[in-house]
Image 1: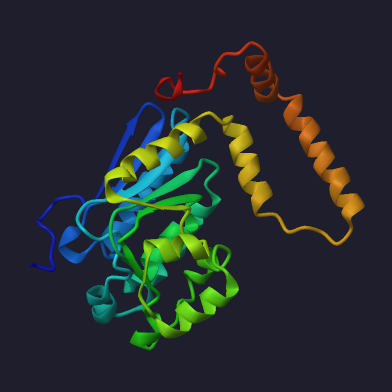
Image 2: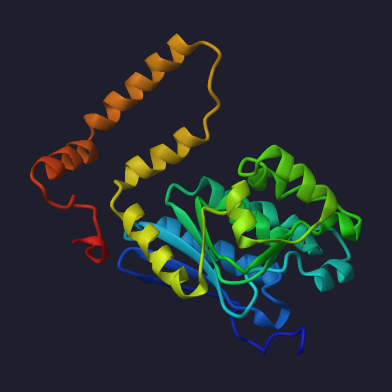
Length: 267
């Protein structure tokens, strides 16, 4: 198979439907490797999703048999300067996903390697098929998983991280779920249903509440519990008394969907 894409065809597709933005990596000719073109398309699509008030949830998915094979090694080898090497562009992608105020769900229907695992770690939720395979292959290339460690290590059990980072061993979707790399591992026939289930659940959360909860999940606890509780109490009061909080409480008491729930998620 050729390692060059058809001329003038985009390698990332973006679409929005019923409050869900879908970002699709479409570079099967090189197993969705993280080329400069692919990462540029991803970054543009993610920024478009974040700027669109109608978008409530982002889904990151792929065409072809492979989710993402990691850095584009052909571009890496031919690069003449730091800006030509794909890994230099990866931090912007990972940071945009990690810091997105909107939940990002990874749909993984095939293998992922190296930088592809960094994408998975950056997403809030990740659903894979059981027989997808994963590996941190960096050490076998004489490099280290430096950039992706920022998004992967917060997810992984420490012993598993040491084993898999140091050995480069291949593991499957079931192991990925056990060690925290992904949220769920399912049979291939139920992958789309499980992704849809999570998307519907996420879309029922208030937009500001979801953004605030993401920040809460990533805060660093302080040593002084009293001061921390006082600060968190003030945060809770602000959310309960906000317009979104008042609407959420009212909708619960009135047994109806909140105003922010897209039509796709309404019962």
